[in-house]
Image: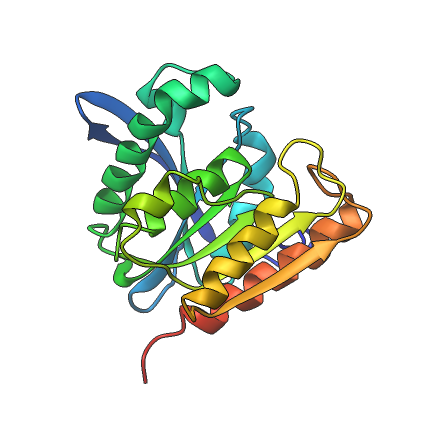
Length: 229
């Protein structure tokens, strides 16, 4: 994500709660205080480790750049702390429903422009973001870090949106082939995308790579979520 050393403007942070199939789901909201109009929204999803803390330092930076950022605690739906392959297989559809409901919640927030909603996901969160975006027209773009589009979703896919693909070539957990498969699909469907494969990176980036990926993320969000003239 973006460099946390960037200059921050005044933002508010609140933990909001919505309901998804009878379960209370938390969302940490980072919103510029002096927005002066409807804001583009970014819904961010952590990976299988459930590491919200690792994303918090960047959410405020994106908010300082004019985005309403919502960190989604989608594990609340299933009471999950950490997700292995078996847990992911069992709960993936429930988390997709939770994400769908999260978008419904976020788009109703008074400061949000419902026509400018992005998903940003890390690993498992990237898989969920791409899967959801393939069936939900409310998602305008996806920024995905070392994820991919689940093979099963190709059977149910209704659409694709612009995607920024960020992946390490040496990723031993989510192979870089996932990035190339997504690239081929986007090209086949003639959907705009950008991609950066980091030759020395694995599943996770060092500081220099994070800073580069963060700048690319910010520019991609700004490019595709700019207000219509």
